[in-house]
Image (cartoon, helix red, strand yellow):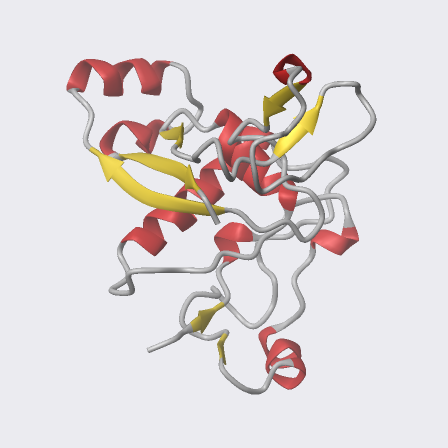
Length: 190
């Protein structure tokens, strides 16, 4: 059965910017009366996480919230999920969280190709016919999402050795990282 759940973990970076503040649960229910579950995972009616400070939340703290959101998804009984979020939190998560590993299992025939001339992006669903393959390269799997971009990832996890956990903890501000699994995001063809 489909569920539409609003999670605090995937909100944009917190602090300073008023547009990062969540509407109240009551307002959200009025705007989206059907299908959405705003009660089970949002902490309260008011946005208690947003603070009108003069600074933004750190990128690593933002990435950690995203990591916790992926852990929540992994615990759900559904076998597939659609995640809609701001590009910033996904970029921080994919590029900075010490317990997230990115893998690439896209096939060459359907890989999005990017011209390296610095200006023009070429979206191709087949191998380029151009014999000069040096001017094409794969988009990195952890690159920031474009506006409204869709990608497909397999979500899995692995337990790491105590030695690896200690290394992750040493490089992270989040002390509870050492007892959490390593999440693996593997990009696949859409």
